[in-house]
Length: 268
Ligand SMILES: Nc1ncnc2c1ncn2[C@@H]1O[C@H](COP(=O)(O)OP(=O)(O)O)[C@@H](O)[C@H]1O
Ligand SMILES: Cc1ncc(COP(=O)(O)OP(=O)(O)O)c(N)n1
Image (cartoon, rainbow, N blue to C red):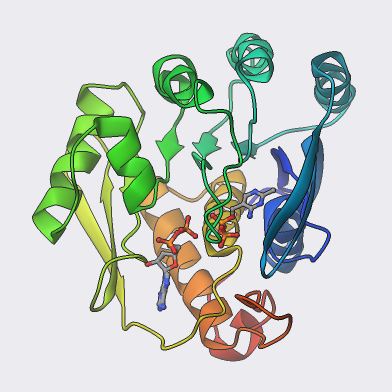
């Protein structure tokens, strides 16, 4: 393992602390990874939904990114909420210069149903940023949006993962099954074979920020030099523990517990 693994998140905020930049930095910290952040949008949100958004001007996002990459070591990075095409265009230019693993959580809509990126930005994300990724981590509805195919079965998930790599150019695809029924099964296609990662479904509505936490944990493990498969396996354990011991706080979908893994013996 490297002396100080360094990871960056490029994403929006969540003042209630469960999702976005906040979830990412908590996860990096828990996994003994030095965390850095570039904020794309200040989001007034909580466990009940999104109340308002204020996007950061694109030149200010670019300056934040330049501040990090001109000075700090970087071993892996992730993107979450990238709200507009203008911001995506700027990031596309910058990301191509970063020669470290890139994990994209293709955030489109919050669990509450509130949109987090512009309608026209979805196609841009797929056509211009997706091909630059080492891994993309869509949930079912995001995978449907990317592929244009309905996903209802485990076989549909496997097909979507392969399609996202071969048709749309992602380095690898992890389709998350959190929104299907039955066990929580995710499928990783790495360009050669399909791997599944499964846990029993936990009966809870406290799932605010699960996708952010999962992709941040994968990024942290990649920054430590783990292979993609090992990074996803350990991140799955991390997010499962975080959901199992999630917090019933707030009036809506409560947040996950980022330190739950300490008592569940997740390897670090
Ligand atoms: N109730 C649950 N019990 C166990 N694991 C879950 C549950 N809900 C989601 N997960 C897992 O949490 C991770 C995030 O998945 P998902 O909820 O589909 O993503 P998102 O938060 O982006 O919508 C995946 O590993 C998924 O299998
Ligand atoms: C700023 C911000 N980014 C992403 C999300 C979506 O988070 P996710 O982990 O997909 O899950 P929910 O929060 O939607 O349950 C967000 N809410 N805010």
